[in-house]
Length: 318
Image (cartoon, rainbow, N blue to C red; front, top):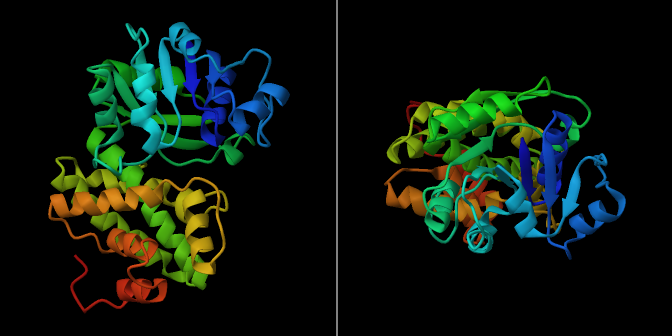
């Protein structure tokens, strides 16, 4: 299968490497002046992996789109709409899209598949979500992930074509839940990092329990299946997001508490603001999401905010 991976950051580079490794004809695309692209183009390495000669590298977007049957997109989710404005100028006949990023559009509250449909029309689109870090995958450490789509044929095709001993894919059954759950876990990851910053890691169990509960409520209110919050897209991704040394959202939260600068992308920051808007729109109480957003926007101190989460008025658990 001819596949182009649009975006060559940490995750995008791994996806290109992985899909090439399991036998697909892959091109990776990136902006010509982006540091990650320059490094890959000049050295075929990025600090985690080495691209084989069979994996083509290009900064020609038209070429990358034209050659592929499947277009995998792995960029910052907040840049998706502007990126698709350029993609939409090209011939997309017969193309299917796979989104490999986790977030909610901050300015609109749209799920990312909704952004694709708004920009490109009724194209086939799927999401690839679930736990795992490239640093572990390239060492041969396996994990389980999910592919979900409203297009049943595309979903089954991708699961069959992308599965291997390294990644076992499950068929998602709830696109709303898969997208919202995957996005929201990054916000819970920031909260976990904040707890780590204070040395309160023992509270992550409570954070996981209550976080899953409130995200499930939002998914249900939006028309999805609340049980999706307990699947691989959300709860199943907590180890990789709330505990791993490789989690950028967790690390962002920890650095924030310590007053240290963190320069890598933490998608949960913008997503927290989007989820606050969605919680208000659907009248769903989301104390953890609201707390993270208020701390990040400096409306409350981290100490007061985190204390309020775990010292709330006495109530029944369920």
